[in-house]
Amino acid sequence: MQISAMQVVAEQGGSFGFTVEFIGTQGDVVSVLVRNDHARTLTRYSAVAKAQDMMRDLGEQEIDPALMDGGASTPADSLAASQTARRKGDQKAMEEQLDRGLEDSFPASDPVSITQSSIATSPEGKRTS
Image 1 (tube, one colour):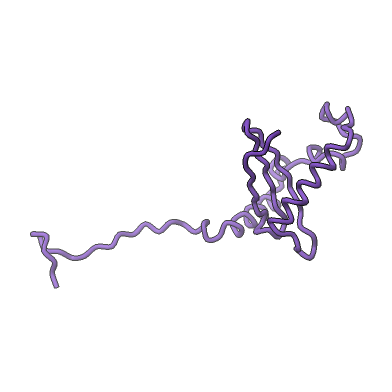
Image 2 (cartoon, rainbow, N blue to C red):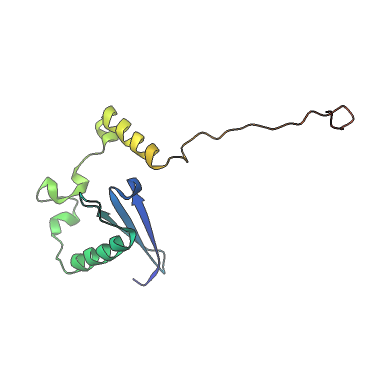
């Protein structure tokens, strides 16, 4: 894959980590989520380097054939084995996720103010004082 572009997205303002997206010349995209440590020392730049290291390590490993069929030897082996809060119907978890998302997107989450300014004019279109 020849990389033509890269995008780094801060997860929860960078406190959770960063998603590094490598974009290929043919439109292929590889996304790597790099989680932040407890001291929150990860930066955009160090996340890219760590994502590259993770991809290099991944390329050197053999894939368990059981994973190819969607199965996993243990539930911890596959993130796909865990259900989402929506699928479980966990209302509290969904509310917490929504709150975090709104906080991360602030102030963009503020409602748009639709107001119009007007200047009083006479019927002829002349300003009145």
